[in-house]
Length: 327
Image 1: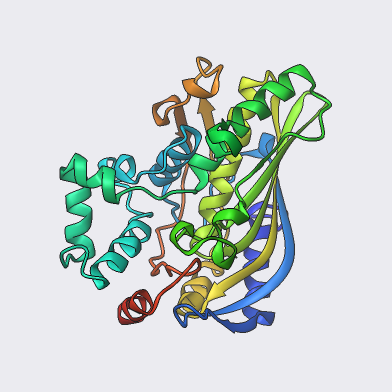
Image 2: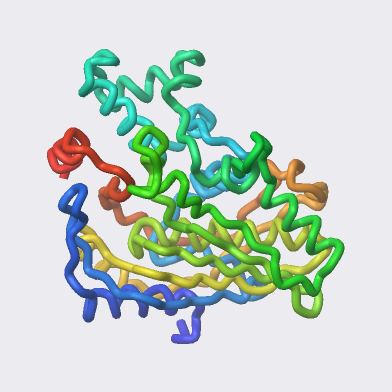
């Protein structure tokens, strides 16, 4: 395989982090990363869909999570019902805070998720993750109690004015983040892929993501595919062809306990990228469902397992001890 295969951008960045990353420690959980700042990779979507081939990437999770975002949802029950468990830890973190205060009965994470799946009222109360992507994309909280549908506005604006330079969706709301928030309103999930912008040139829609914090081994392959698919959907509903997906990183890092897995991945040569087929019936945002996308000719190497670090956001001592006990 030629070194100009698009996947080498990702592999080369991972190698650079292994070689030159600066050691850092998460103050909330103690997890160690090796980190660089300010990098960029880009994929021409006419050359294939950038679902990495050097390890199998969780396509079902990508599809359901993107639909969860795009439909404005913020309760994990939809994901749990579809056997997608990548978000389980964050509502459980909130539940553990209530457990520590004696407000809720003791429950393991497995028991908690089973309760989310089988008890609709419990899920409604404890499965909600306020002020995360779906809510902020489609229901941004504004003054006077109204909400702003940023994603629909982006689509409408590009339909009216393909030359627009302001087709941007933001998920970084300081009112609900870290110490900027009132303690009772602080989001327990650290917004990572915090802003994206769509732009049309010569009838092709490109999308650029700014990701302020990026886990190169586990998270970034997921993010690449998710936002590349979002670009394809937005291109179709605005009457354009897909252009590029541009991925711009703030802090991009590898966790200490992912280093050996990354070295294994780096021994593999990329295979031809797959393609995706979006049903032509998708003409509006609300038309999109996971069933409307078909992945074709995906031939990856086997998956490489690694533990996900649940870091960032407001972290109390209870969660810190729990997270460290799992590592």
